Image (cartoon, rainbow, N blue to C red):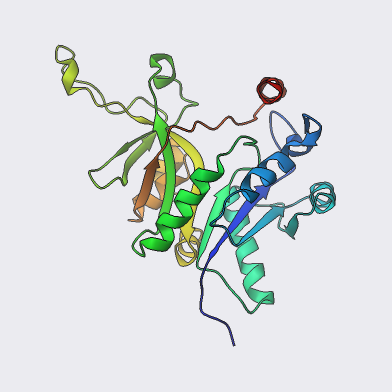
Length: 255
């Protein structure tokens, strides 16, 4: 008989393939694989009951196991990290008695992820049963980045839930003669939390029109009526997309 769901499991989706940087999760940074830095940071979060690496590759499994991580093998066919963690959740439920109520998805290429932010997401979900999905964002002050399509912007409603995410600059400032009327978007950070049942529901939906247009998975949730709570933070994640990014972050670590 299954126990009542409680607690938060953190899952790091870790695929081998990367268009610009194949095998990047095992790339050494300051003497450790990139993935291990992420795992070490996540372990500092106090509101997490369990950390799992979900991967599609035996090379990643071997290295992750060597530094002490729990690993779940998943399909090579997943198009997103969300699909990968959903499969990991399904496998965990099949083989275990004790289950969990919430899931946090931390990207495997962010070695400077803030454990305090992870704790905030976990505590918010556990304290407010109405939160189906949660993410984070930080102020976006640099004018240059606001027009960069690689920088995802988000605007919020009065409750702190996401109204829209976009690669374009949002909102359009119509009254340029009135600077006080400007509303600045936030920079979206790629960390997500889900109520477990909401995660299961989300992955059953087909990619939505806005998602296909902007290539932003979170728009699928909004189009299907799933509210996304957004926590604001001063933390700005530094992800590794290219070998040049790895050099830049390693230099920051050594400082």
